[in-house]
Length: 176
Ligand SMILES: [Zn+2]
Image (cartoon, rainbow, N blue to C red):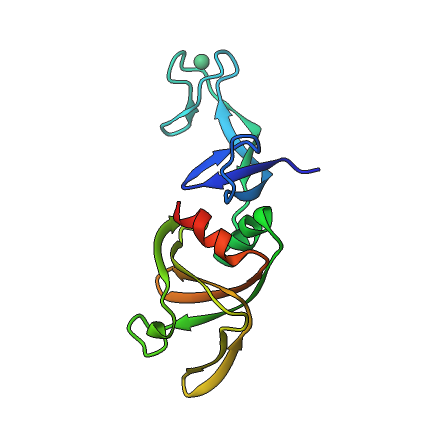
């Protein structure tokens, strides 16, 4: 099984110390080339050619493997985080006007939580199932089934709808 780290507020944690809503991220192996000194292992200094800053020997390329967390988008990250607490599924997304007529239709709880892709969870709303059954966007009706709305800011405002088993508990955990 691939190694997994847990992401919470910009930091990676092990499973044991991860908060309940930390996002599980697989660690992926990436390979890169580094120029190192064959004698002291120091990293090359780049002049006209790669030289060791300590002894001046010519450095050689070496493939270095490191592990980095995979990058997942906001919807995937939240679905994984919610799924650690209860059964949860992503049901769709819609762009919102920051001061549009749709926003006040539900009173959402403001938050400020950074997500792994750099977007921010700025609010959540737990409501009746299919609370976004009908709305208007560009004059056309849309449906977003779900009982938990996550309002995400990633340069524009987006509403992500989830169908979850315990919406109230998730809102509580997110707000604590
Ligand atoms: Zn050297």
